[in-house]
Structures are given as structure tokens and as C-alpha cells.
Length: 102
Image (tube, rainbow, N blue to C red; front, side, top):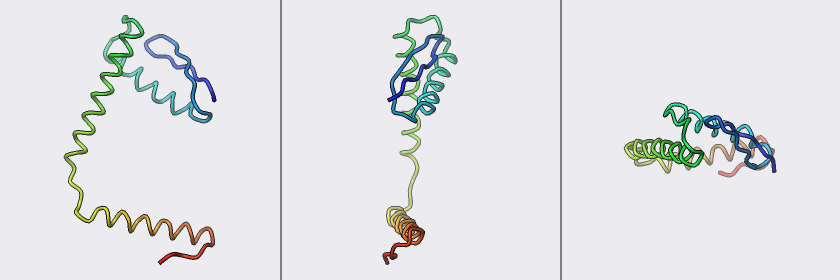
């Protein structure tokens, strides 16, 4: 486990994370900081600031899910995806010197 210190809304927060995840957690904190800064929430209490940032991020997720639901996939999408997965597995077998499955 590692600790990483995040700066959000002019305040520092230290959180624990898995080793190697520090950069990813930092990027997530940067998204929150962007929401806090854009919405001008600097003068709020920590709780209120983080609540508003969470609501704004949840709204972004909701919007993305709504858009994704409108995307029509071809009827044979799952079959095609399965064929691609099989090809990738076969390539991995070749690269690792294992017999290829048909």
C-alpha cells in the first residue's frame, strides 16, 4: 500500500492506494479539482465542495451512459467480437510457442 497526497480545492487529502496506482489516483483527483475550480466552489466546506464535485462527475457519467445507450451495434457484434478474441488467443499461442486452437 502507498499513500498519495491530493490537492483539491486548495486543501490536501492523503489517501491510501495500491502500489503503482499513485499516478492514476492523481489523474482522478485532477478531474475532481477541475470540477471544483470550474464551478467556483473554493469557499465551501470540504464536505460541501466534494459533494458538489461528486454530483457534477455523476452527471458526466449519466450523460455518457445516456449517449452510449443510443449507439446501435450490429446484430452480429457478439459473434464478431468472439472471432476477434479467438484470433488474439491464437496469436498469443503462436507467440508463446503453444499449439494453436482451431
